[in-house]
Image 1 (tube, rainbow, N blue to C red):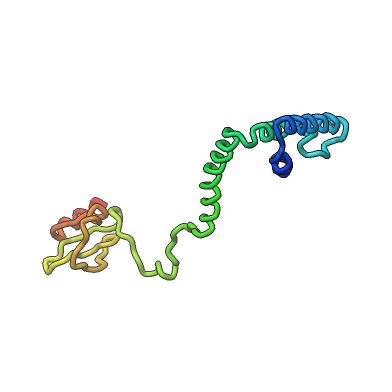
Image 2 (spheres, helix red, strand yellow):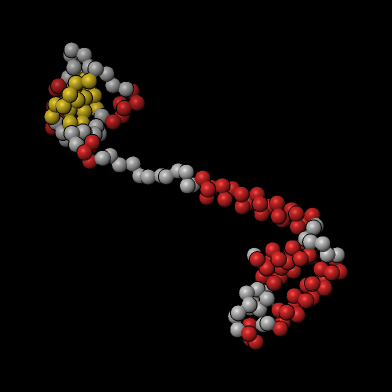
Length: 164
């Protein structure tokens, strides 16, 4: 990235023929400092992977053209959402929900397998958990009606206890 940045800074005021001379110079340096001669000390010019040098050539040749500007804008619009997500992820911490054991002590859960309701003749509903009376509630929300069975009388509840 540093070499590409330097390339773009150097060529910004060059004519097309001067750019071609610059690329010719880069090619000569790349041949001179090939990995066989110098080891792997140079980063891009002597790299066995020619894609970095090829990328530098394309950047120099396309600099200032509409194609270059479009590629730059396309990369910006692809990178911006990723960068924004990275930054905004620091503002939110998603943690798993767990009930504090101290707060959970003395609570219970109504499920169809462990609980049922009996309509109380005085109004409301008697809650039974594990076949034991627990409490009476004045009303229940319809959205919870599929969580437990509701019986009209204690005899229906007794039949429930025998079956379960």
